[in-house]
Image (cartoon, rainbow, N blue to C red; front, side, top):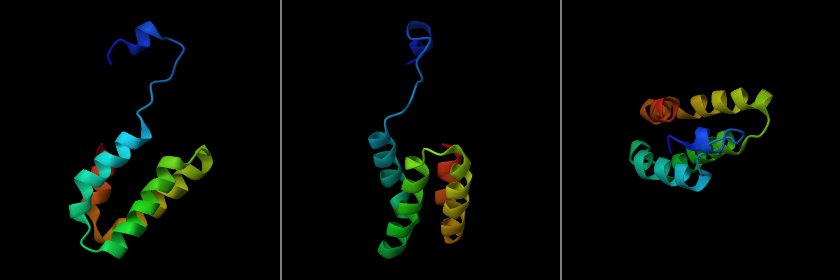
Length: 81
C-alpha cells in the first residue's frame, strides 16, 4: 500500500466502496438503536459515498450530520475514519 504512489505515480489511490460500506455496517450498526433509523442513516451515508459532485458533497455531509444528531458516535466514527 505504501508504494502505490511510487509504482503508479499518475494514479489515484482509492479505497474500494464495498469494503468501506461493510466496515461502516460492521462497526456502526450497533450505534443506531432502531432499524428504521439505521436505514435512514445508512442512506445518508451512501449519498456521501456515491456523490461525484464536489459542490454537492458538503451538502450530503451536512445532511448526514443532521440525520446523525441522535447518534453522534456514528458521525464521529465516519468523520474520523
